[in-house]
Length: 182
Image 1 (cartoon, one colour):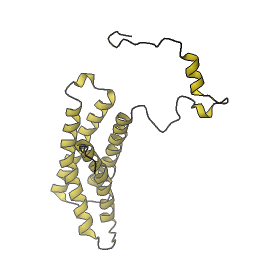
Image 2 (cartoon, rainbow, N blue to C red):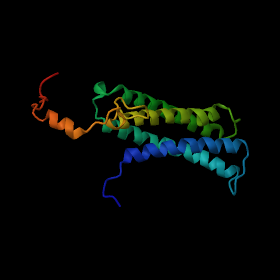
Image 3 (tube, rainbow, N blue to C red):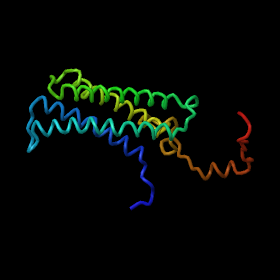
Image 4 (cartoon, helix red, strand yellow):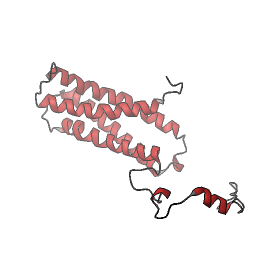
């Protein structure tokens, strides 16, 4: 096994990304009275309630660990980090409403009641956006789009990098002073 430390924030975020669709599918199956192997209404009900509670319990430390990783210099945060913090606050608010509705009326409402809409759509849309912005932060400029340059392999005339290096070997290296402003 690797001796590298496991990144706690990443584990919590991945748990949220997994529990959100699980709660939605379990809620839909509960309302549609789907029976699969030994899973029936009580199993679906348990999965919905347990997933929602776990989402709430995991979201708070995930947000806090994300904030502490970025330090407390909020004014210098990149806009993507600010968006993620706002989405995290929205997600926490949605979960508070869901827990209130669960404690007040349980799972007795219709499929598209307020609770159903929040579990099926609210959690998953906000979770998707959090994942999207998290990947944007993690991956930086990397994306699925085309590269902004043409690789040497695809140029019309073959390019030998050693020939180019030989031609440029007499040029003085360019020095960038990191202490000076550009």
